[in-house]
Length: 193
Image 1 (cartoon, rainbow, N blue to C red):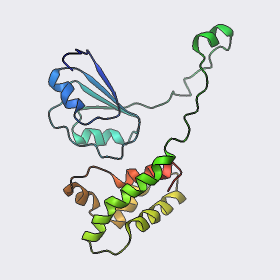
Image 2: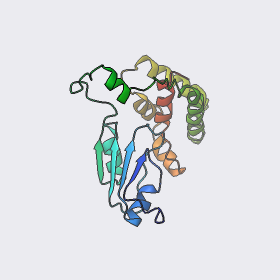
Image 3: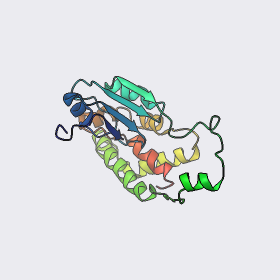
Image 4: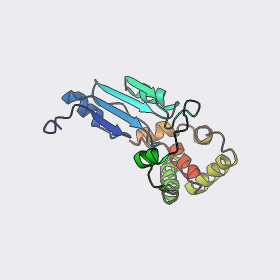
């Protein structure tokens, strides 16, 4: 990084270690979280200076701050439709700003089964440690079934806490920052599972 001598680093989504590196070499970092992560934000390994975090999820502001990131702000992903105005539709405008329409597609669908399997793999050791005989994937499916009935609210963290008390602490003791509720949320969001 010193060889490149950047005046500013902009990071889309979080790469563990980059905030500490930028702080160490004195380069400001702007981190914009736009994709939900399936991992919990861990504490920085060193004090952070010149690191600003922006997240589109209002509820994540507190998570980033609690993890030790000193400057965290909410930044929506889209324009405020109350302030947006229609642009002129003329040849000059189209020539300057128009672009072909691109369909990104449902890029998360392929990941849904993988995320469900990962959640099951996280739950398996927890269930075995508690002496439970329920199959991890059966529990995954039961949780997904309840969440799919209520798409207006994200119930998975509450459902997991009620069904699997102490799961977060268990996973941390195992060295995992992966959040099974986030994994299952991705499954529901992708329409998979």
